Picture 1 (spheres, rainbow, N blue to C red):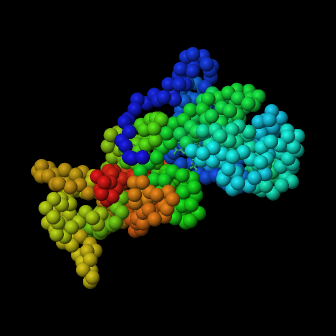
Picture 2 (picture 1 turned 120 degrees about the vertical axis):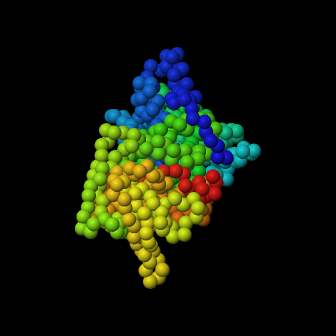
Picture 3 (picture 1 turned 90 degrees about the vertical axis):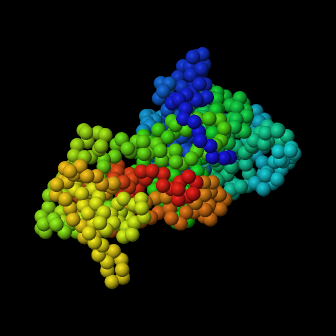
Length: 560
Ligand code: ATP
Ligand code: MG
């Protein structure tokens, strides 16, 4: 797969929506029913968001409904924490399953009865081969598989063994139930697939009631049929499973026969969207948890300050196609900036402070200036900010020996302080080590508000805060978790970006940010969009950078 720039498609039109619209027009279905079927073995990521927006979006647009169904068929890997996180994340994305919350485990009894039905029909058998033997006898893409020596057991023999499997008489792995289809089938999924395996484990919902658990392939289609799903939408890797999906529905007395449709999963540059990798990132301590803002999880995006509408906007832009591709993560950032530019209030924050003393400003005095909260939205109002003799500006906004195009502060240079005055740098004060510790400046009282009555111009406008009235804060700047656009999932540790987190302490932010709420995005002028970290201890002011104002990473990574 190569990175491609996907065209921005017309919102709400793609091949799946075309199928749905046609099925309604021809009255094949009166109501559309879709489902989102996560396995609760990890947190949801942005790839899942694509599936969620597709399934819930179609239900909304066509007046149908979408079920949330936990595919909880493997208690060895599933946990209540994940169930709770998935519900929270789907809701946060803006979707509501109403009363339609289901679990594959709700159907264990029915699924079991249907397995006995297959046995009675001579369409399933208990196989005593080990997992390794089953794999070895499955054949390859070019060679047929070999029949199991246990394939021709009698119906009575199979029923007896299957019931004893259920009763817990055998250890894990001793036997499985397989469909009896065709070991020579061209499609390997039809070579007597496993329907049930023995697993002595505690299930989050059914406890220890079950000693056998259905396979994904066996549980999935039948759950769809029980719920009356009309369009079972999944990712392309299940295309080869569709003949099995249909075979099971054709051979069971199910109440409906849903159709499966496949679409291309989301892949993003500089990102790995695999639960296995994400789980290992968390377990291995490479990130601070599932909601670490560097993670592509919904929880991570939320903590980083990404609004749910930005995720939905992104999914709309990339569209739904049938061919796999890789989307540039810059497209996601674009959607985030689009939303935040409209909603985030503007504030001033100095991340790496350098002290400025205005020598001609009277000591012990101060004043209030008016600053607008949003340049394009007058209804966002204004706020008062304190100005005084001692201020902080950004360290990077001063250079002692500037190159030609550096318009910011340097000895003798005049600049504008946003919403305040013109100031001119007189001198840089150094400590014994030769480091610049303070700038001595003068201000022009006639430029209050930011304009000179004599019409003279300055080439830079800097953000600043008052030394006395600003508050201390920390900032966390996030860069991509991986150094490569296509990190290696098999050895992802080698591709981890050592600079994915830059934690900056000693920042100074304007007083209005002291009681910022984590749900309210802000733009730190000239720096980027931030939100207060909801995970920081109370009283500690920590801001996460959601996204920069421009795509600076592209330059750093040398791809621009
Ligand atoms: P894994 O990461 O191991 O492949 P999974 O993400 O498929 O697991 P599920 O919980 O089964 O885990 O996924 C739920 C649904 O989300 C499935 O229908 C799946 O097709 C869809 N989905 C998963 N990853 C993506 C993706 N990257 N893009 C779009 N849809 C996805
Ligand atoms: Mg899956």
